[in-house]
Image (tube, rainbow, N blue to C red; front, side):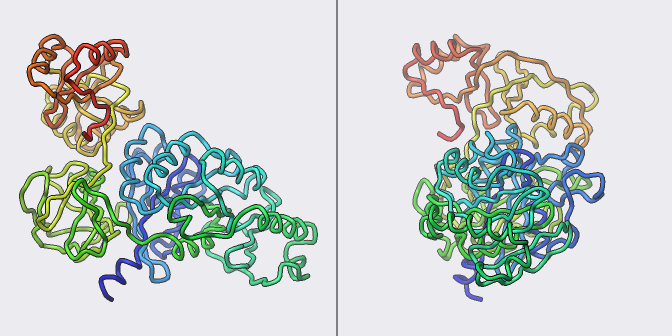
Length: 525
C-alpha cells in the first residue's frame, strides 16, 4: 500500500463529554466493533465483573471514573481508527485540552435525559477555537429521556453549531423500539444486548406496511411524521461544512446495549477527516511530506507498575516514523533512537516498526521528554497549542516519611512531567508547592505516590489566587521585582520565574507598578 493510501485510511478522534454521559462505555463498544476486544466491560456494575479496557489505572476502577486519557487503535472495514478516550471530570480538563490538540475530529457524547452539561460546553469551545469537526452521539435511549427535537434544539443553542440528524429514535425508555438510519435508509430494531452486534433490517420505503409489522402502527405513524419534519427542518449532510466545524451530524443510540453505534461508525469512516495539516511556529506541516515530524501531547508514568516505565505519547504529523532510526529532539538539540516504539490497546502494548501520520506512538522515556516536545528528521519545528494553564488551587507538599524522601522526589518529578499538576519551588523558603486545576488531582497524586512510588505525602493548605509566568522586557525591573516580592517568587520545573499572587488585588497592583514585566497565565509564551 502506498504512503498516500496509508494516510487516507487513518482516522484519529477524541471522545469527549461531561462525566457519566457514557464516554468510556462508548469507547468499549467501538473496540468491540473493531474486533479489538471480544467482551466489552462496563465502567461500574456489579453484574459485569470485567472493568472497561480504557480504565486501566487502579484508581479509575475503584471510583468508576476516567482520570487519564487512554489511547487505543483498531481496524474497521480497512480503516485504521485511533481513539483517545479523555477524562470527563472537570478536574482533569487540562489533560483533555491537550489531547484535543492530537485529534483530527471529535465525537461528543450527550446524555439523552440530562442534555448538554457544563463540561461539554467548555470542551466544545476548544473544538470551536480549532475548527475541529464534531459528531454528536446522543446516548442512553434505553432510559426515559427528553424529546429528540428538544435535544437537537438544545445542542444547537448550547454548543452553537448547526445539527443534522443521521439516525432517528423510535420511542425511548420502556417504549424504545429501535432507530431508523436516515443516512442508509434502513431500520434497526432494538433488543438489549450488551455483548453482541445485530444486523439492521432493510426497509427501503418507510410508507410500506412492512414498517407497521415490525414496530406497530402507532410507532410507524409517529416515525413517518418525525422523519418528514426532520427533512423539512434540518439540511442534508454537507461534508465540507462538517469538516469546517460548522455542522454536526447527530446519531442516537445506547452505548451500554451496543445499539446505534454501528450506524455512527459507518458514517464516521466515510466522512471524518484523515490526518490534517498541523501549524508550527515556523510553517504549516502537511501529512504527506516525506520527512517525519511529530509532537508529544501526553506523558504517562508507570503504565506497568512492575517496570516503573514512563511512556511519551507522540502524534505522528508527517512522514513515516521508523523504529531504530535517529530523530532530532528539537528541545534538547540532540538525536535520539527508539528501539521499542509501541502501539496501544489501552494498557496493552505491541511493538511496531513503522507508524504513519495520524498514528499515536508510545516511546519509552527516561526523562528526556516534556509535553509539547517535537521530534523531526533534523528540521527545527515547534508545534503550537499545547499549553499548561495557570493553576487555581495550591498546596504545600510535605514528606510524611523521612525514610522515603528519594522516592517522593522521584514520584513528584515524574508525575509533574505527565502534566497532572504543576510544581513550583518557593525561592524564599525552598518549599515545594503543587498547583492544580481541580481538587481531585490532589487525591490522585497522593494515591499514585503511595501506590506507585511507596512514598507518603502530607498536604498543607496555602492561600494563593494565581500563579503567573513572568517575562521581563527589562532585566533590571525583574531584579527589583524579585527583591520586593521575594516571598512570592517561585521557579517552575523548567527554572522559569513564577509570581504567586495571594489575591486579585495584589496581582493588579504588580501589573500596574511593573510596566516592563509581562504576566502570562499559560506557560506557552
